[in-house]
Length: 132
Image (tube, rainbow, N blue to C red; front, side, top):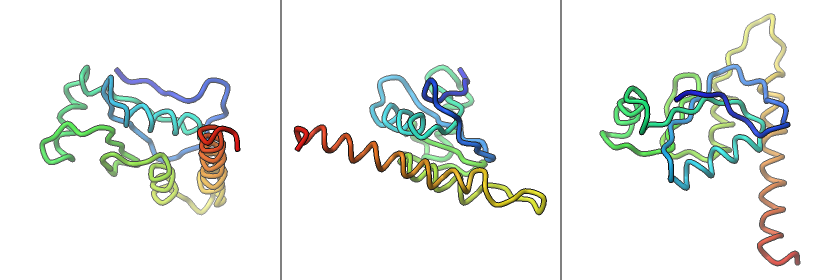
């Protein structure tokens, strides 16, 4: 199953490199990463390794024969179990750029997305601390 996904009502971050998240149902690390990317407004494609044999084979090929998820590719570069920040940083680093394209788009959007993640992390920590 392959689908594009982001937080409902959020504006997508204009990512040039394709972001693909390989996941499986019941994986808390996958849920956390996918939730973080959605909150950041990052558009990504999801591939369920339990439903897609090609996705399973790919994950095994980059995870030393294991089915370790989440595994993420950004512009064709694979990372096993990255954080949302790492995915955003990777997207920024590997964003294609041409002479006719000003240096904004993804590169301008990543700091804003990272800032949103930081704000959400602070708010959640405050909430967990009992609002102190």
